[in-house]
Amino acid sequence: MSFTLYQLDGCPYCEKVADRMDELDLDYDSVWVEALHSQRNEVKRVSGQRGVPVIVDEDHGVTMAESEKIVEYLEASYA
Image (cartoon, rainbow, N blue to C red; front, side, top):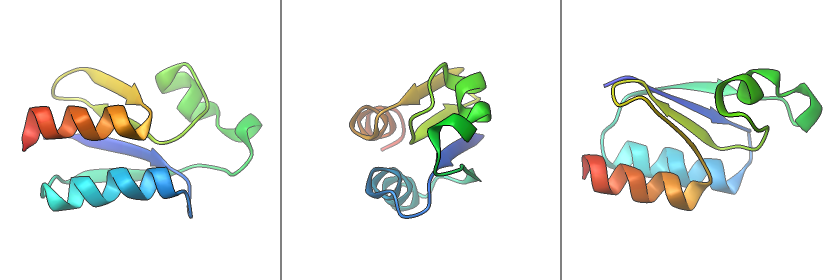
């Protein structure tokens, strides 16, 4: 499995996703983004928006934002 998690240090929504991925024993690469939305060009390029968290599940061709939706997706797909 190949995951990338775009996250911001200290973001509780990002931590929620990272914690659930750890609980599910999913390996992922973290990309730490800038605090300023205007500096999050890589997130914008991948997801079309600048908010985090964003997860990219390369194996399934899924890119998704919003922590609740991400956690639901992970549980439905990998739990």
